[in-house]
Every structure is written in C-alpha cells, then in structure tokens.
Image (tube, rainbow, N blue to C red; front, top):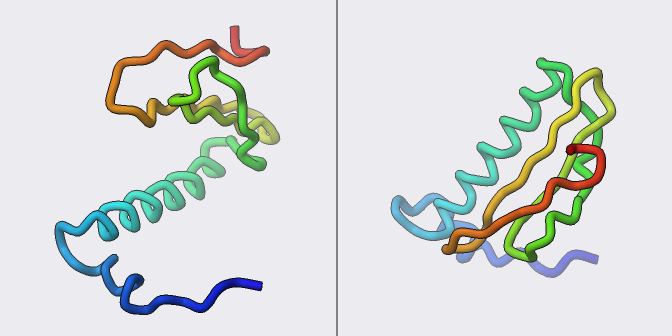
Length: 88
C-alpha cells in the first residue's frame, strides 16, 4: 500500500525556483516527450540497458517500427558509455 501523501511536500512543486518544481517539471516534460515518440514510430516499454558506467541512465524502446536508445549522464562529470548490445 502507498504511504500517506505529504501535501506540504507536494505543494513545493509549485514554488518557482525550488528543487521540487524543477524535478516535477522535468518529469512532466519527459512524460510528454515519451508520449510524442509514438507519433514517430517509437513505442513499447522503456527497457533498462547496461552502459558500462553506473552514472549513465540507459534504456531502449524497441516495439515500434523504429528503435530508440537513450543514454543520459546523471552525474556532474564527463563519463564514457558503452553502446548496449545490438546498437553497435
């Protein structure tokens, strides 16, 4: 079961300049972008991939006529990533 909602914390997402607002807006934009991918032939679940560095968030979507590989550096440093198998 889900924990009780902390509505005071949730309200921070509407405070301009707050970390909570920045994160909420970023997640909202990611969701909007994911929905638009269907329009260009990319569909399916986001499947996690291994990219060689734990700082790299990697996933693919491969169910539609087009494949998509996403590699995102989640750190504050430059990193190298390996292309997952099948994306050579």
